[in-house]
Amino acid sequence: MIEFACDCQMKKHRAPLEGCEISSGAIYKLPEILKDYNRIYLVADENTYRAAGELCEKVLRDVGKFSHKLILEGDVILPNAETLGKIILNGQDPAAKADIFAYSPLPDLILAVGSGTVNDSCRVASYRLGLPYAIVGTAPSMDGYASAGSPFLFNGSKATVQATTPKYIIADLDVMKDAPWDMMLAGIGDMFGKYTGMLDWELARDYTGEYFCEKIGKDVIDATDKCLENGYKLTDRDPACIKAIMEGFLVTGLGMAYTGNSRPASGSEHIVAHAWELFDVEAGNAPHLHGLEVCEATRLIAIMYKMLYEETNDAHLKSLIEKYLPYFDAVEEFCIKMQVPPTVTDREMILAGIRRALILRDRYTILFYLRDAGKFEEYAIRATDKLLSVI
Image 1 (cartoon, rainbow, N blue to C red):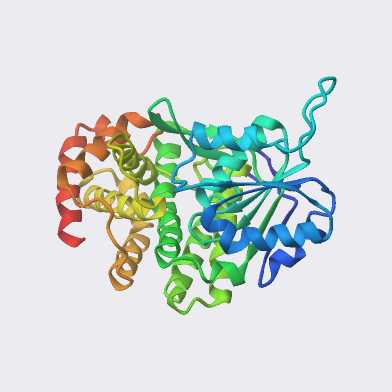
Image 2: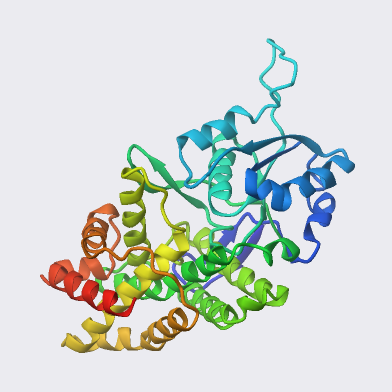
């Protein structure tokens, strides 16, 4: 358990994370890290099982802590009811003998092996089953390892549902450094969203009175800066660089756990990205990597804020945006130099995503500000055209 006093109105922040191991050879430390658990249920997909799950299983079997495993077949793209159902249904060892006078024997820990979808699905299963879980990360592809919410696809839409946080986060740098390049870029892209998201949060604080924590806000920006700096070194696949990025991810994930919501990690850029992802899902297409969608949406929202900065007569709003302009420029420079691929290039789809984002989530952001000012449609069109001119 992490707990500390704070000057914000919450007075104290807490997170149930009990340990984090980010190192080369971290998988071999599983028996010691998970020493309090003896019936461990391992969940992976076909790719993550090859990358790390098989070794995790061997290490746990050797010390008698392994219960059984579930390897999700095919392309596991988004957390959904089908994936969750498989994890819960296989929570009890299918080979175990039935006892009609007792409840099904469940494991004492779920060990997720993967990154986004596997982690998000297992955290929801953990919450629903009342079982603790740990995550062995396989790629520095997103910042949600320590998050308490899970983006979930259900009833034809995508929403963040209540879940739990892992007891332990294990990141073996020997595995992480071999992750696909697009997943590495996605992780950095996901972090870039903190710049626009944090400005959205400050906007909500000043224009609607929403709660804001100065310490968490500063920590998240510092972590994002660290990721941006190390992002240029990713091409070398240097374990020290990946460790620094993972530590940055941890800060934003814990920020969500500390506040009990996703404000420290996401704003209008994530909502637009979710809208684009939904269009793909509804059309029966596989969505792009979430972090790459967020990166493009961050560039789009940054354009809107720059336009607002140039045109507003509100001195306070101008000073608020001005603090973030260097961050926006740094993101744009990174995306150009590192050739971060765009995900949505169709003008009408970009616009449709912005419009849908306005009603997708009731969260005050620049989109709500522009709506209330009667400038939403104008800014959506102009920002879309500007984005297309640079990507």
